[in-house]
Image (cartoon, rainbow, N blue to C red; front, side, top):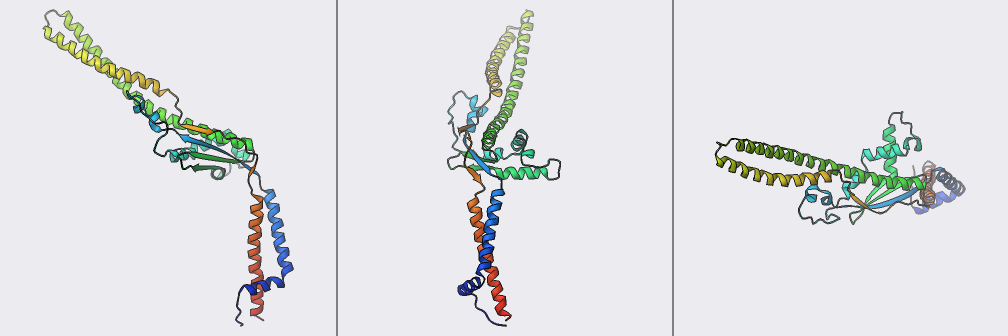
Length: 292
């Protein structure tokens, strides 16, 4: 068995000996890659950028404060929270149902694993990017440029609605607390007033009792007035629709295709084909000389 040195000259010589086959093989690979690239569906990309508002701006404790000093945008990065919300199953389900994506992506919803397939497709077609300045960029890919823009805008709208609903739940809990305190104090004030009426009807009652009751009623009314104010404020806040984000610019249809990048596909296939055919032809020459 011979010892053969494999170097650049050996490889060039191996290719030169079978140059026609080498050239035709690579030409076939390029033609095949070109054909495949034109068979792939064309996708258009639409982008939308938004900035989350400060969570303190919708915090009921802030809204009920006597003096409010809140920045519109928080110093704390809120983008991750909104990205997770955008990636949530509930928002994906909303987009799937609204745009009938099972039919659009040709996935049979009755087949096993259909939900996994469509969610996997959405992961490829919906991209969320955290921006350095605390913003969020959402990119949506679709066969139709207009649909891509509609979906991007709808996702952000749904994120805003969902975040607002979460705030409303928190505000509702606060209202329930104030309502309970309000009703309890109101019952207490009414019971004191009833006691005062009873005292005044009984002429033999000591005047000290009437004075004490009046003092209790005055104190209770002061507390009741404070709670009533909070109760009325929280009643207004719990039903108020708050914006949780600011859209810089709505997504617009993009008239340049995003993928496939046909030139990259063909160039990549050519590079891989060139490498593989070189290895194959060099190997043929190597084994031919070894067993000669």
